[in-house]
Image (cartoon, rainbow, N blue to C red; front, top):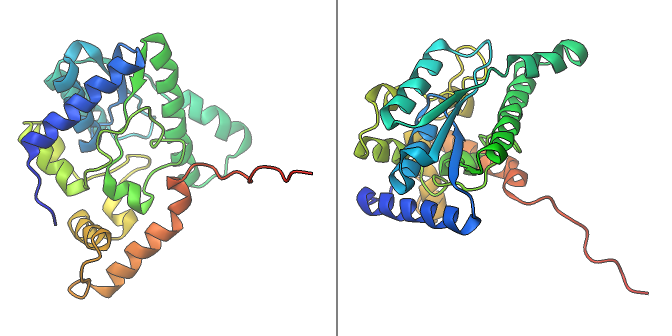
Length: 253
């Protein structure tokens, strides 16, 4: 696995965030703060780039969300000193499923929640003249562990080049709350959800395999079932990482 100079990387990302915002003509960044490590780091980097007055954290709990996630999101906003907004998405989610799809499985409901949250964020971005700040890391991007047009919808992705283990390392370097850094990663879309259980591999192992694949290194030292799993995840999620395909130009007569 690569070694990163986190001080230099932090400065690079901060400059990127500042320059992109200025070029866009917007005034602030807004992001969904879940209480997890990815949104915590994205918010922290934006604050470092622009100052706390130009970052807004939106807390968007569902009635089934973990109360601890809400507390951790509030802790993060207080730690960074940023403005926070709380919007309960339960009525927006339940209205559709109660009226039309009462038997929908947890995955469908979870995807709907992710997309509702982004609808809320993009609406608030207009109100606050803010760009929507993304929170997707490289590990989840490459394995497709995100909701298309949901949590992957953003104006800018400051963490997309960082693997999950690097997100943890950078968060420690920036002094983010240990409670958030040490918690089990979860999208909190249903009770007792764990990212690593869903993916089927721990993040440290996943990141080592992804790095080896990217650099065409020898994979013999890894569990072959894990390697096969990662290749399958990459292949099955390739459509998520591409723009919607279009036919070629019409044939000329």
